[in-house]
Amino acid sequence: MPRLVHGRGARRALACYLSAGGLRKKPRVPPLSDVQILIEDDHYGGRVAVAKAAGGGGAGLVDGGARAGGAAGAPEARPQTVTPPAAWRAPELTVVIPTLNERESVPVLAARLDEVLKGVAWEAIFVDDDSADATIDVIRGLSEASPHIRGIRRVHRRGLAGASLEGMLASSAQFVAVMDGDLQHDEQCLTDMLRILRAGKADVVVGSRYLDGPGDSGLSRTRHFGSRLATRLAKSILHSELSDPMSGFFMIRREAVEKVAPALSHQGFKILLDILASSPTPLRVSEVPYEFRERLHGESKLDAAVVVEYLGLIVAKLSRDLISIRFLMFGTVGASGIVVNLAVLALLLDRNIAFSAAQTAAMLTAMTSNYTLNNLLTYRDRRRRGWRFFTGLVMFAVLCSVGVVAGVGVSTFIYVGEPWWIAGLAGAAVGTLWNYITNTMITWRIH
Image (cartoon, rainbow, N blue to C red; front, side, top):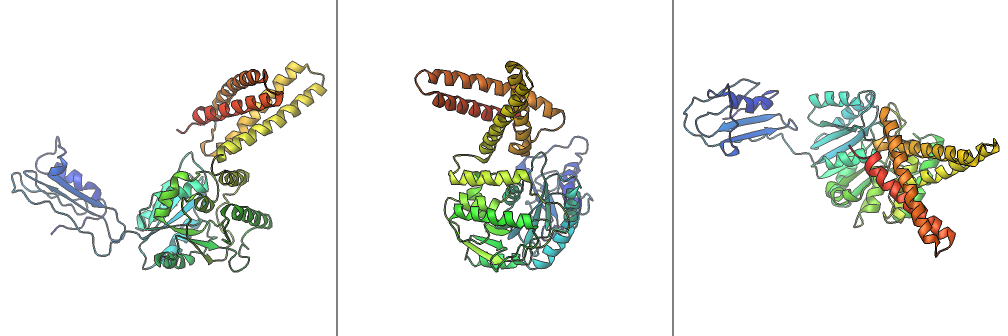
């Protein structure tokens, strides 16, 4: 009977097999037909591993890292497979938890999930956006002690929607839930959500702050007003009576996420709204009430950039995704550059500086302003830092200069037979498209 392999034995099983049978100096990796290796992670029942050779090398079964091998020339044995113990179950539910500087909250939430989900085959995937407080180290420590905890560290990427999507796509469970890592969402609702999905009554179950009256007491007065306004805008897109489309707490069938994933934005703050608005077929939605708690640890992921991204998402969905969030933000920043240009030009002319010199200074100032704002907002998930900020500014200036030449050329050509404003708009459109496409591909390309 093969024995279960625990600890480091699972990782050493293959190495021990290669060193068995006198192959210590130059171990030859046998073809797949000659060896069968089974390594299971330690979810729901312990790590197991077995290596079995066909012909002269012997079989190696390892326990705790010890080596055991058959003698050379031993009779060929049929490959063996270790059957996972009865306690092992593939996860039925994955709870995805985006984190940012929440090392104090993670252990508390993990303990609460373990208590609430007893009897459920579950796992929690914490998706950390490279927190400065080393949250990922706490997550890894928990994963070493618990088979239910997994962690994903994202570098050079930020955003709640992107983190949630990566976590959901990393799951193989039938159902996936998304909740915050700051303890403001009520984990007790997970069992009710799971029960509804198991019964086939819905495709998505949303935790609502407003189903039984105001339930967002954990928000400040300003955020309460903003949340209500954003909810009204979201309802106008979904044409739904969903009480809380801005909720960040929900559970969904994974197959529904898989279908809609290519159409989702990695930017933004509210992935539920994006899922519901982008789904090719209407999703059946149910709601469960919960009380939004006050934040105990960590920091809010909501900032000015997120607000802009949310407004961009609204426009993108109203235009049926013809206008992307990033392009809309790029255009908005460009419009702000016109204001900066005119303001600086007026200021310098008022100081009796020659027009050509004043206009040059104004254009350089506007270009620097546009680059800085795009780096902070439009491409926040690809933000250039340190010396790369300055090299990016040079690339941005060069590419935008080409855009100016292209725009002037097109507008001059059109001006021959069309009104001046049509020629001007055409030139601006060509320049904007050139600047957006080339800077996305070059200045802020994905590494």
